[in-house]
Length: 157
Image (tube, rainbow, N blue to C red; front, side, top):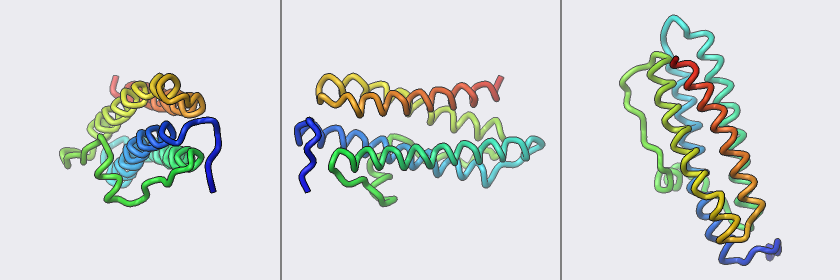
């Protein structure tokens, strides 16, 4: 069925590809957050373990939202680990510490990386590709990552 939403097929394709990269980043970050939750050690285990659970729950919602936005544009979301690893900007984390500070630093760096990537797409989606909806969508997503980054940063003070 043809997608007719007032955005040219060419523009929808470019935006969907950028969102596919974002989806891969979100999925990799989700996995890294699960790793932090599962493998955390230390005196603050209980409270940080619960906090990481909140983070991976939020992350799962963001993954789903990005995939659904791609579908709204009439494209299929990448949905294999192979695709995600080919598309993502993020890297595997080193096994250099399972204490809360080490894990929080790693997650913070990834959230900040996503914030920078998303910020770079906002105007492009709106101005170059005439997609105000996706521009607004990623702005909201960026704000969620900014709040999480602030919270993670606050743990490190």
